[in-house]
Amino acid sequence: MSQNKAPKNHVFYRNQNWKYPRIERGEGVYLVGEDGRRYIDACSGSAVANIGHGNKEVAAFAKEQMERVAFTHLSRWTVDTIEKCAEKVCQWTPGDLNHVYFVSGGSESTETAIKMARQYFVERDGKDSPKWKVITKWNSFHGNTLGALSMTGIPGRRQIYEPMLIDFPKIPQFYHYRNPWNAATLEETSRLAAQALETEILKQGAASVAAFITEPVVGSAIPGVHPDKIYFDMVREICTKYDVLLIMDEVMAGFGRTGKHFASDHYQVVPDIITCAKGMSSGYTPIGAAVCNEEIFDTIMVKGSGNFIHGHTYASNPLSCGIAWKVLEIIEREGYVANADLQGAYFGKRLEELYRYPIVGDIRGKGLMMGIEFVKEKTSKEPFDTAVNCKGKFTINCLDAGLVPYPGGGSVDGSRGDDTLLAPPITITREEVDELMEGLHTAIAKTCEELL
Ligand code: PLP
Image (tube, rainbow, N blue to C red; front, side, top):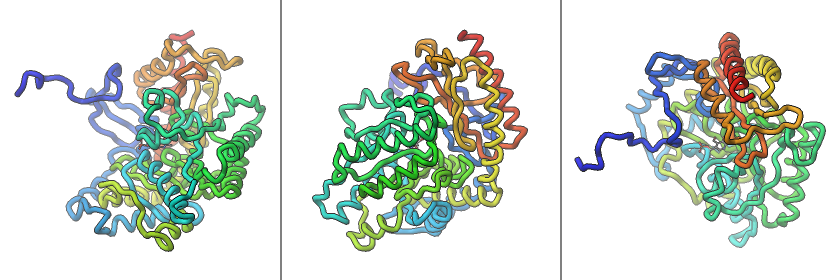
């Protein structure tokens, strides 16, 4: 053993300044530390553990599948679990989104979607098709791999990698609380945000634009922010008018999280491609997918080359597909989507109580995908100085109060408040929501004491 292999922490954690508590096990909505402390998983990891922790039925299924066949490569074989999972996903997707390309996670799903969009236009219009640009938004998150990061609109995640990114055009988010138009209503903000898409398509030239990507409810960038239905009515029309594909990034919002199968259902919008991951397997295995409509599939796979120029080693992994199928089957059987709707409505109502604290500026979201934005002063919406570390203090106070929130994107330039995502497992009961609320009251009250 060489000298530099002396005992040390070998894990390259994400944040060296954070002392990572060691978790021993999970049980339903709870995570249990090795010291025996129980925490409500108020964010399901990062809106992942939809059916909660420690599900024995999933574990038994995974063992059985692992013993039967754990891995085959998608270039040669198929397995019943791959077909069953694709069928189940398509029972949940809206409209004619009937073709599932499996990958290993969210970033791969958004990367896949934009490559699918590009190949669609090449197969349809020829190899010289000028359509390749993807219009995206500021204050959005679509993943951390370089293509996905090129679409992501969180400056703090992008800055040091900017020389390596594709310069995709970006328009403003439907962020009503701090909208750049000073619109008075969510409907007006949504209308103006949709108009910004049309303006950008015309600026870029519709002939060069392949797709527009958006989250239906914003996740980690500005948790819980969502538009009025008018936004997607207009966006769908604009995309169709200019021959631009609409990609809905449901990586966080999909699979029951917002009280509907997909968050697209809230707006009755049918995108051309849905990207998804996270809740698809509830974190029991890494998996994601890009699900496309008949037109895209037919153009590439039936009338076209029949060969999507893409692929990862773990795409269509039979073990992951089996586990995701089992998770979705449990969600259906136990009625957890309806539970997310029911408990989400209760949670949303109870969260309104938090406006009594001087640092709570905005609360927004759908179902069990809720966000809180903290401010120094409510009327002016002035954020805390980043050096004050409001988010960090709130997080520690939450852990002390026995719950785990998810950090939102916050702002790097102080242009908006620190925020947090609250997204407990969709199995949550009313009593557990009450317990979560009790912890939140304690944590926010303490944060106020520390900051004001
Ligand atoms: N898209 C959205 C909307 C997300 O919320 C995330 C992750 O939080 C991603 C894409 C990237 O997913 P992953 O972290 O699995 O690569």
